[in-house]
Length: 186
Image 1: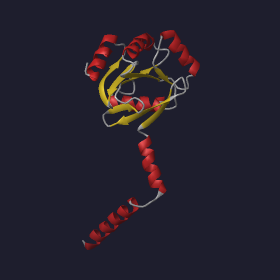
Image 2 (image 1 turned 135 degrees about the horizontal axis):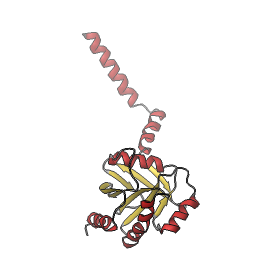
Image 3 (image 1 turned 90 degrees about the vertical axis):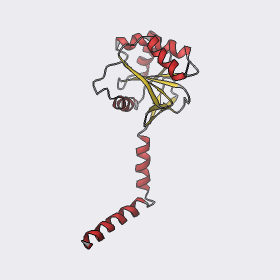
Image 4 (image 1 turned 180 degrees about the vertical axis):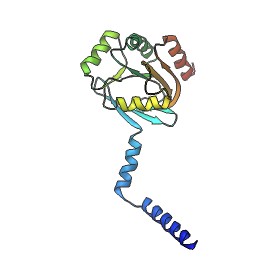
């Protein structure tokens, strides 16, 4: 019995000492784990937004105290095309308290194709085309528990990193606006 106690103590002590070392690889691993909760997205104008995953949802570093809508879409999707002008209307109406970010699910889409979508469907809100898009979409889908075969458009609304509501498929502008008002306390 004393051999087991001694061996257990020895293992515990070695784990404790190795965890408290100044080993750079341990620090790099910890930073890597933290960075998996951040997503750097590049807008069409080449400025960037940082989306941060929290335990309760997502927030945008550059948009404190704003309602955030992450709109997962594709340029070829008819309901996504139809919603673009409605999202633009809401972005214009609540410009100081709302940030809408269109996150395309299309890999390696060219900026000019995304710009053509913006022009044709009056999408006057942030559209992002980044290597981080698919990783962010995966994280949102997992957090919402909608499954890997989710329908688009998929919109998730957050306030201060907390999920307000999400919508899958075509949704009336009035429903989205109602949730924006609730989140803003209006």
